[in-house]
Structures are given as C-alpha cells and as structure tokens.
Image (tube, rainbow, N blue to C red):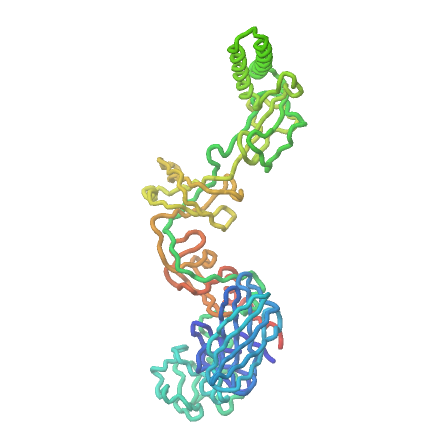
Length: 574
C-alpha cells in the first residue's frame, strides 16, 4: 500500500491551512484540506501531551468501510526529538448515538504506528489517543473527525473551501449558497467556477468528470499540483526530523530589559592573581614538590625548596637571631625556675624570640624549626600566599634562581570581573545600568551578572570607552582570566512581549528569520523584528505570537527543505 505523508493526504494544520482538491474511491488522489473541518475528507492532528508530540495523518472515512489508506501516527520525545518506541497506543473514537470505537495500534517502525479503522456510522466523531510508555500514561484529545455516508459525500465536499484559500472567496462565488450546499452535485452544478484557481474550471476542464473520477490525474492537472502547494509552507517529514539534531520551543510572553552592546574582558580581582618570586638566590631542590600549571594549591602550601648559595645578611642574620633567641628563652626558663631572675626577664626573652621569628618568616616564608631540628634549616621554603590554581611555573627543579626572580603565578578564579568597555556615547546612562549578560569568545552560552562593582571616572582616550566592572561568580571554574567577551548592558525597567529563545533567530543575509512549526511536518519561514534580549530570550516585536512553536535546533535543515535540497522522506514501505 502506498505511503505519502506530506503530499498524498491533507496538508493541514491547527492554523487552518489547506488546499482545494478532489477525492475519490480509488485512493489515487486524496483531497488536501484543513484538519478538524467537518466539510473535508481527511486531515491531520498535531498535539502535545507534556513530553510527547503526536502527529497523525488520516484519509477520508466512509461509514462501515475500512479506511483505504492507513492512519499514520508519529510519536516524538520532545526533549530529544527522537521516536517514541515500544509505546502502547490506543485510538478511541466516540460517534453519534454514543457509538464507540477502540483500536490498539501496533508499531510499524520505532515511533510510527499504523491503523485502518472502520467506523460504523456517518457523522462527527471525537478522537482521543491513549499512550502507555515506560509505566507512564498519556491522554491526548485530538478533536473532531467527519465520517461520510458514501464516496459521493466526499466528492461533494472535495474542493469546497470555507475560507479564502487560493483566491476562492465564498462571498463572491456566484450561485454558491451554503444553505443549499446539502446535496450539491458537481455533475449538475453548471457555472461553478473555482474563482482564481488557474486552469481549474469544473465546467470546461477537459477530462475532469466527477462521474468518472478515476481518470482525474492530479499530476497532469494544470495549475492544480498537490505535490508542491503554493502556500509558502515548508514540508519536512517527521522521519527526517528524527535523523538530525532537532529541537522546538514555545514562544512565551516575557519581560526583558532594554540593552546596548559593549565588548570587554574577564580579569582577576585584586588578590585573585599573585606572582610569587624568590627572595633569595639559590638552587631549587629536586626533592621539592613537582607542582605545575593546573595544580590547585592552598594558602601556605609549599611551592618549592630553595637552598641559598649566597648567605647575605637578610637571610643568615635573621636565621641566626631566631636560634639565639630560642636559646635565650630556654636559659631564662631555667634561671627563673632556680629563682635567680625575675619573671620579667623571661617575658622579655620570649618577646625577642617572637620578633626574630617574624623577621625570619618575612624572608623565609615559613616558621623555622627549633634549635635541635636542623635538618632543613638551611633551605628556604617558598609558600603559596592564596588558594588557587597554578597558572604558570617559571622555575624548574634543580634550577638556579636569583633574588626577586619570578617563580610561580597563582590565580583564584572563584570570582572574576567582567570589565565592560562602555562606548562614550552611553557614559551618561551608567546610572541606569541594572546588570549585564555576555558570551565569551568561542562560546554561545550567555552569562548573566547583576552586581555592578564600579564605574570608571575617565573615558579612555584611545578607545573612547568607559570601564564598568561586574562581579562574575565562577564556582565551576569554566571562565578563564583574559577571555574576551561580547556583552549586553541591561538598562531601565523590563519590556514585555512575545519572546523566543535566542537560538530560534537565524541570520539570513542580514535578516532575522524564525522557522515556525505549524504542524507535525509543516513549517513557515518568517522574517521578524527583534527587540531586547537577555542572552537566553529575545523579544520579537512582530512576526511571532506567544504559544507558537519555533525551531531552535535544525533550522538549517528546514531551510534546505525549503530550497528543495532535502528530498521528502517516504520512510518505510507498507
């Protein structure tokens, strides 16, 4: 049995899009028309229930007869946009006089479910789908479905467009009265012209005989081509959507502040980046810690051991003073115990020791050992002054260093500063700043900051910019010191309107374009007018309404489908 999701059946959607056409008992050409309209032969449903999207297409239904084409139901996980496999799907339809039909639908391939229901009575039926997936239950009401008494009933409604689609205006359609529509027979309806539908005249159309509908070839029907409807819509089958990264979001009404652009960079705050140099000349000991870039260190942690090779006054004298002070304290303690000196002499000795130790620590970077602990007393201990990451190590194990030579760079990136360079023309607006968001080079994820630390007081003469500093929390250490950033400075109170995710807006030849998903396999390209943005969402001044579904990933493939580069997928064979 043939399968043509996007062309052979109704190209319709929840926004009442459709085409005029002809339906017949042979199933060789079905009538494109709006879904959920009781005056058409078939159509489609696009519904969402939480995390699942359901897209179903169906042919016209004749009372008491099995549908000549199968219903095709596509189930998609919204989060991953992949097919819902191994679901239990039940189609329940309630008709006139409390008639009820319930059908369990098997899976043809993962995500695709087929059924050919038989409905016993003509009239309007209500359709509902029940899904069971991984112990979760979903109820999806799909709306009304029209069941016809016979094929002639389908023929009577085929091409009967209740809107103004394709120039068919019922207000101007001479001799066409809705009150007399019942029993409308194309065989006797002389003078019925389909308005502006080029080349499609029911009175003069050669070979177009509603009594002999099987001879009607839609491919050869001049100006009436069901394969490429001239509606401005883009068709991309659900199976094609499953084959590449794809995502859809719902446009929302949001409040977003106005903003202006400013470039900047990320820097370490004062005390967040330190350079550690050697205060003595000597050899870096090979048995010292082998720390390198990327290693995390704590305040006071040993960075290197240095053996001084030139014992000048600043190091040797203070070390000797500590040793002498320690011995004087020990001697005073013995004399005090023997009653030979007053207690004040011991207090003075301990004070001298404290002063000597403090002087030695300022040079050595650590507390010297006691007089009897001389094993490493000749080595200088180079310590880290802050918690942070080793960003650079400029001395190797065994290397000779001079006094003041740079050894390590330590940086703490837990909090950084975003220094935005505000153009001079916005300098008067700095009092209105309420925050900022920015992206860093090579990335697309926005970072939002609200804490203004300081505003510069002088315009930089070369760049004509004013620095404004923001605190940036960086607990996961993703951001790096020195990164360049492109920011938006948020000002004033927020504005309210329809908003879409930033990823939904495509730049096509300088025009902001959004691809709107109007049904399961149908899209519309819209040029929009964008407004303020907070880095994640952007206001759309015109072209989008809240509640519409917009493509946030896979827009390029939708564009290719519009250009005819992607061939329509006909999927599995029946």
